[in-house]
Amino acid sequence: QSALTQPASVSGSPGQSITISCTGTSSDIGTYNLVSWYQQHPGKAPRVVIYEITKRPSGVSSRFSGSKSGNTASLTISGLQAEDEADYFCCSYATGDTYVFGSGTKVTVL
Amino acid sequence: QLQLQESGPGLVKPSETLSLTCAVSGDSISSTSSYWGWVRQPPGKGLEWIANIFYSGDTYYNPSLKSRVTISVDTSKNQFFLRLNSVSAADTAVYYCARVQLLCFESWGQGTLVTVSS
Image 1: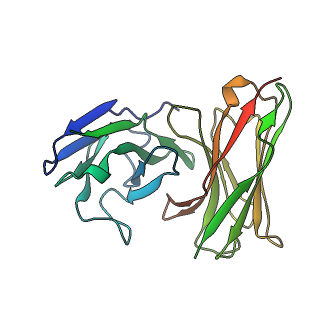
Image 2: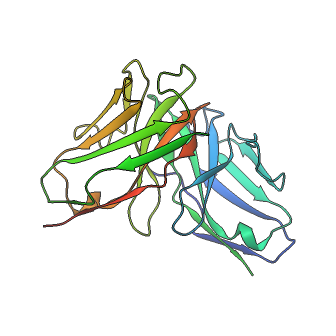
């Protein structure tokens, strides 16, 4: 069970949109519409911002959106704000009632 | 409001057993809509799923850790537990407990750092 592949870092200026990719296999992302995304600020616990590919929990900004194509899921943050600077991890349900997380992406607001 | 609180030794010797408790408040661990799980994060690295459990005792393990891990639950105390055997320095991490709903880690504890060192 290998970690899902994410870019190590993504950056953008305030107000811009950025997209983080998360690539898996046919044993996880490719088969299940059960991808979630987590935001983690330094020294804090992760917080879910997207679940089931596209759904936002109550209280999460509408600037966060998700999508999936084939074995790759994506998280888009629009109208980038300073508070969005954090690490982001994807996670997918996988074959055998297991879960696999992504390698993580550091988002920098320039 | 749901709260999850991890507790356990912050220092474990190599080859020994790591034991952690997650105390749940604000929700019943016997809820039929929730699973309960453990996730860890080595310093400066990514997240790794360890295991999940349902209140009935059904368990699910990361294949790479399955031979060393046991997850269990005590519904009377509204707590669940993690045991990791034969630890090494590679098991040094922040360990988080979480509530799993809709197959997503929906709520997290604050995490507890466990260091493996002699």
